Length: 351
Image (cartoon, rainbow, N blue to C red; front, side):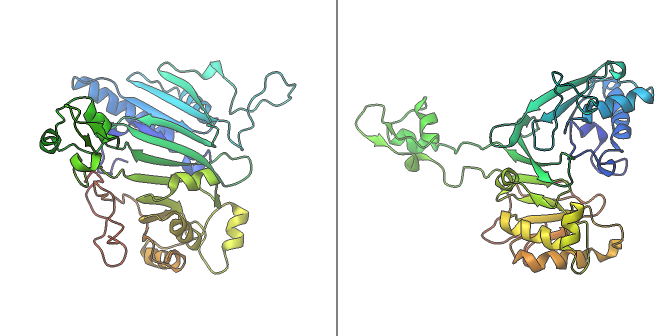
């Protein structure tokens, strides 16, 4: 992270897909780095930073235990850990039942509590998802999560981040010409409801006063944890995403069955998933260490075999940055799919 273009102080939300070490062991060090960034922020006249962590049951105890045993303290800002409860792989803690073994993911260990470290929970929705909002410089972002199939008893998530939908714009001159002055009627027109003119002599329809193409397309980013299969709720959340980050761990001939056994995916699987989801851009990560960094194009070619030219395809590398157009990718022109301008570059994805 010290070599990334984004400063540590810009990190406000951390999404943990599951509690395997290769996805988790770097978190305590990152949090301590954020403590330094928070202190610097305060010394410069700002407020202490708030870091929000989201993940499966047990993520709070992991953070609390790591900080406690290393005698680390949260002296600046605060850390809020939200655990997503109620999934298929969540055994839950049932205090009314006689149990010789208490699941350490759910137990509240007061001995390792830390000042400015808070534990919150979020229950699963009836449709098998979890939903919440996070703030951003461009307005609230909607975050949804759902489980994916990885390995038994390891609760694993995918996350989908999407911008809020923006109302279309009213062309005030046209509305006034049709007899509707600025009022609450404008809100109805933006929602697609026809209204009476102010003098009551005519009906004004939304298509008469709304600016064409003013309804901004919301961008959707999907990050899927280690998996060999997506759940139905996860498929639904990811549909038509602009960017799909999907693992491609196992590479080689006839690896599909081995991947299923080990709870992972192949590039061919990732390509097929991106096709089914109509993803504009597929970014494959979690690629086997046996693959030389210079062989990324070979991995991409494997994914293309099952993608049917639906998506632009990339093998991820350290410090990869993406440019996502403000209106999302133009699917009609297949931008960045077959000879279009690549969305990958040295600039951050805020264009």
